[in-house]
Image 1 (cartoon, one colour):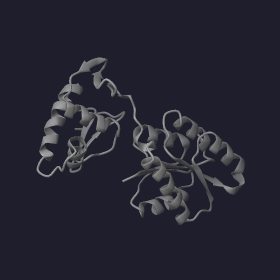
Image 2 (image 1 turned 135 degrees about the vertical axis):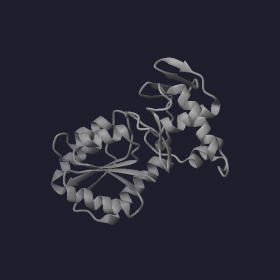
Image 3 (image 1 turned 45 degrees about the horizontal axis):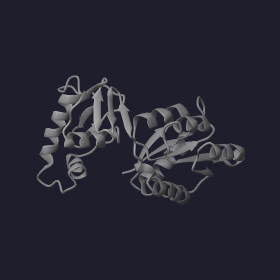
Image 4 (image 1 turned 60 degrees about the vertical axis):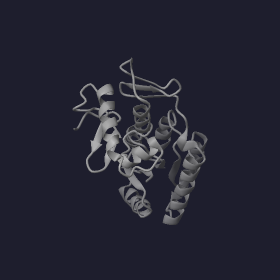
Amino acid sequence: MYNILVCDDEKDIVSALRIYLSSQNYNVFEAYNGQEAIDIVNNNTIHCILLDIMMPKVNGIEAMVKIREHSNIPIILISAKSEDVDIVLGLDVGADDYITKPFKAAEVLARVRSQLRRYMHLGQGQQTVDVITIGSISMNDLNKEVSVDGVLVKLTPKEYEILRLLMTHPNQVFSPSEIYEKVWNEDAIGYESSVAVHIRHLREKIEINPANPRYIQVVWGQGYKLVKGATSNE
């Protein structure tokens, strides 16, 4: 399921877009100013952003510039027809597309699908990252090394691949079956319990308190996620 961030200071607009997108099984995050949008992007896996230009606190252009410092997520600007100059500026500094108010559901959905197709299926959503750092954990994928607070930790190949999967998708929940199939590259039927064993060993190596983990956390009844910028909850 793709995560779509909708950011507009008009709650009716956000509500309408949520209805449109949810009807197509997208998971919708909501923000009402640019700073909220930045915070959501920094703490969640977002696949596309619908971003209003004129907002209080931090406007859409300012938010987009900040997001573009570290992400190439597709950004579709939302504007009034009177904001043509701002649309041109937005496209110049990194927007991928725009829609103008009032808009139709079919147009919004078509533009979102188009951007997701480009991002996910033409390689942009799967770009290689050599060094990934979340909190005190750093992974160098070139050297296949992991360190915690600057100290190297020795992981088995499967532990490394599980951690890599979780670190490249922070805050995204993966079921044991999904983890097994992505890491072992085979059907998970009957083998899901081995994931829990590897997770336990992994926690023992990267967590200060494995019994109360800060990073690799359980979402009960759903699976595991690696939490970015959060405290423990188990």
